[in-house]
Every structure is written in structure tokens, then in C-alpha cells.
Image (cartoon, rainbow, N blue to C red; front, top):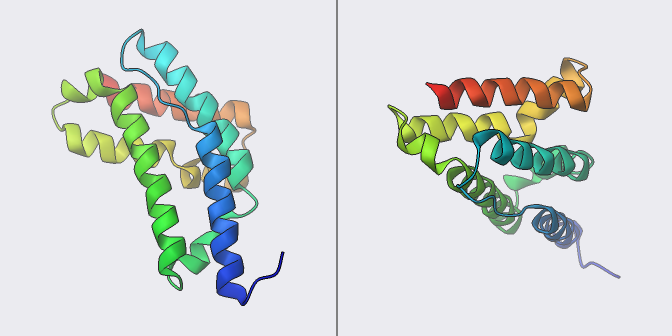
Length: 142
């Protein structure tokens, strides 16, 4: 495969990343016990971390330079937010600040928060998932 320039290469890399993410991101129904829904969301996010780890940092550098890459990144973020909003709809609906709780939930489930736990705080994936689980449960309880 040949690319005309670096921008075209970056766009294709971002598109490939989006395809890999889409293959792993599945809807989680809002019914059933919270623990079961949370376990499924966390399982997916842990798998996504491994897929994203290699390219995510480089991708963020190019978001400002490429409208196409920025659009792909925003589309993925919207998908992640929708998954969280759907999976935890009952808890968010009863929260005193549903939109603020969703904003925080999105941050807690985001790749960057897990990266902080794994790379900077040197937690293994199991421990990082336990930390995220505790934070999400605390948020949704209040």
C-alpha cells in the first residue's frame, strides 16, 4: 500500500484503529444487575486499552493537524459515551446531576484514566480495573 503523504498515512492508521475499536465495543443493555453491566463494560475497556496503547498517544498529537483524524477520534469518543449512557441509564437517571455524572463516568472509563493507572502508577490491569470499578460504583451510588 502506498500513501501520498504522511497525512494520508495518519488518516488510514486512525481508520484502522477505529475498525479495531468498533470490533471490540459492544452495547451493554441497561437491564440486569449493575455489577454484571459494569463487569461487561470494564471487560471491553480493558481489551480496548491493549488495542489503543500503541497508537493512542501518537493519534492525539495528530488530532490538531487533521480534521479527518479528529473526526474519527470524536466518533469513537461518542461511541464510548453512548455505551456508558446506555449501560448505566437507570443509575444516571436517578443521580442528582445526571449529565455531570455521565461526564465523570466517561472520564473514569476513558483510555487516558486507565493509562494513568497502568503506566504512571504502575498498577497491573487487574488492579486498574478494580480501581475503576470502585470509582464507578461510588459515582453511581451517589
